[in-house]
Every structure is written in C-alpha cells, then in structure tokens.
Image (tube, rainbow, N blue to C red; front, side, top):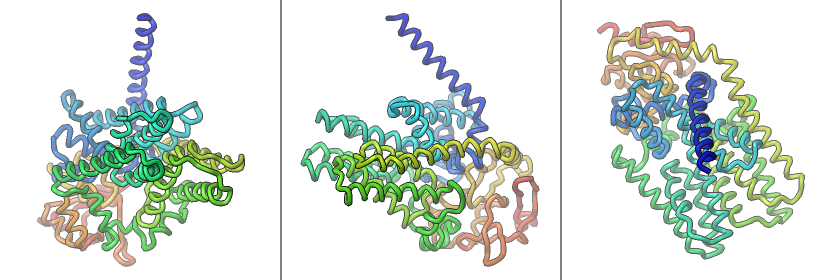
Length: 481
C-alpha cells in the first residue's frame, strides 16, 4: 500500500515538473501577442497582479491606482506574484508563473469535469478560445462546479457548502455572471419552495455586496473603473472602434472566417433548437435545464444588443452551452446535428489558435523583440501614452505605459475621458511618447490620437525610432523644450 502510494506520488510530482518544463520551453509560443493564445488584455492581468504582489500597489502603469479587473482571478495571480516576489522580481518569470497556474487549474478542471478524451478536447477548446490568462477559466470552473453540485443536491437533497460558496464567488469572479447563475436557484425555488435555493440566492447577494465593498476599499467606488467606462461609453466617442453605431450589427455580422461574430450564430442556432423541442415538440425538460437556459440566453441577448461581445464572453457562454447540452432532453437524433456542428466549431477554434501561433510566430517574435528595445531609445522615467493595445506594450517595454481607453486607468482619468477633457492630458502629465500600434481618424485624416478632446496628428510628432512592426514618436512640444 505504501509502495503504491509512493509510486503515485512520484509519478504526480514528475508530471508537474514535466509540465512546468513544457510551459517554460513553449512560453513564447503561448504568450507572445498578437495572434496567439493570449490577448492584449491578458497582460493587464499579469501586469496588475505583478504590481499588487511585488509593489503592493493596484496599478497597471505604476502611476495610477486602478480597479480595472475582476477580483477573484486578479487575487489568484497577485498571490502567485506575492509568493514569487520572495525569489525574483523579473516580470517574465512572474508571467510564466501566471501561465503555469492557469494551466494547472485548467488540468484540474478537465480531470474533474470531462468524462472522456473527446470531452477533454472540447472543453480545452472552449477555454483556450477565450484566451489564456483571462478570467473566463475561473468563471467556467465555478459554473461546472455549480452544475455538478446541483445534480448531486437534486438526487440526495443534502445541504451543500460547496454550492453556497460557489454562488458567493461568482460575483467576485465576474460580476455580470450573476445573470448566468441567478435564474437557476430562482426557478428552482419558485417551483419547489425548497428554502436551500433561497440560501443560494442569499449567498449570491452576499457575494455581490462583498464585490462592492472590496472595490470601494481599493478605489473609493463600489464598481470597477472598467465597468464605469463601459457603462458610459455609449454617450461619448469612447472606444468607438469597438462600439459602432449599431451594436447588434457589430456583433452579428461576420467579418471573416471563425471571427467572434460567427460565434453568435452557434448560440442562436441552439436557441432555436431548444425552443423547437420545448414549444413545438413539447419535450419536457428539467427545472435545472430551464434555470441554465434562462441564464445563458438572458445573458447572451443582453450582451448582443448592448455590448461588444469579445472572445472571452463567448468562452464562458460556450462553457454554459456545453452544460445545457448535458441537461437537454432530446426529441430525436436530428438534434445531434447542431450539437455536432458545435463540437466541430470548437475544434476549429482550438486548432485555429495553434495555426495562428505557428504561422505568425516569426512576426510576433520580432514584434516582441522590438517592444523590448523601446526603453533603449528613451530617457529614464519616460512615459508612453497608448490608447489601445497597451497591455503587451506595458508589460514588455520596461517603460511606463499609460492606458488610454481607461479600462485599467484611474477614476479621475475615466472622468476626463468620458467628459472629453483630455486635450491637455499629455502636457499636464509630462507624457512625451506615443506609438502607432493603434491609430485613429479625424474625419478622413489618419491621426495617432483622436480621443475625448485629445488630438495628436502626425505633424505634431517627431519620429523617434522606426521599427519593422511599428513606430515610436516623440511630441514636438516635448522635443522643443
């Protein structure tokens, strides 16, 4: 018995060591932005977690206090950086640690919730399609935990601390995910009058309150700065490159093969399949199914009409759809066709990630090396203003990068952004440098910046350094001084 136990322990330790070696060896393949497994937003998490864990300051740029993140996932990564700070402050090592913990959690999730190799492939595709190092992993983990525990509770009717704790954590993992899970205990309580479901709703409410309290302690407001900007962006030209005149059109019209817009068709397809079976074929479904169904599609259609749905939103919704397919009582084999389409689509998304990483690896590696060189051409303590695509730049450039879209900046900046009061921002904050990684337009003229009163034309800047993949500029007003 002891011998077998020791063998198992040795095998598990060996697998962990092998896995960490794998992450270390392939981390560029997974980590380098763009066109890879990580989004630019992934670096917001790693950079902020590094600043919290190492510098004890909730900030992306090291200057402005921010609350532009979801709490639970940031707490996990910040704890990793806090632990790693006793050994090293090299940011790349912290990033590898963040990626490693992401994959370890993912392996735990797959081991616990996939029934076979095929399901492991599909669930891996669902998670990775939302980009590595985003909060979608922790949300999906909680959703599956709730699903499994609810099935168990329905069979045994035993009090579940795991369910209570999972509902408490949902708002901390992602505040809008309360829409996904809130319908489940509500529908179950209204139909069964079991008071335990009321406790789940209460636990969810306490989680929301804790979410507000933590944000208030950190930033002085009960909500995150990113949600503050997003809630108000429709009344300004903020983020106009994402929020176009008609949000529904933006989300639903495909711009290319397997783009985020095409993903919405999958959810609409299953919405119709579910309705046909429920209304026309009158196939009876469980109360748990109706709870999950209501949550998913209330969430989807709300996002569809009011917000730009990015890939990590779809990752969470596809995880939810996977659960719905487990719960759904089919009328005929015909309904397996949409299910087959869904699985094939997820496999395409997964292999599409690998394809892009291989195809554009050289470009991404050059881009990465050039970003790391930026600090060589700038005076010490310089600052770069980057309206969008600032995550990767801020993490690897070793120069303070000010996030211009406001999602990981301060509330003061967000107010200036939303009130079109940024005209003198660069001068007031002694920011002299910009890149053309992201550009905007002023009528028909291409400009570096046109945001909330802040306009920087190419005639206002001097070319500091020309790289292959982008250019670094200095404001003429700074150069002349």
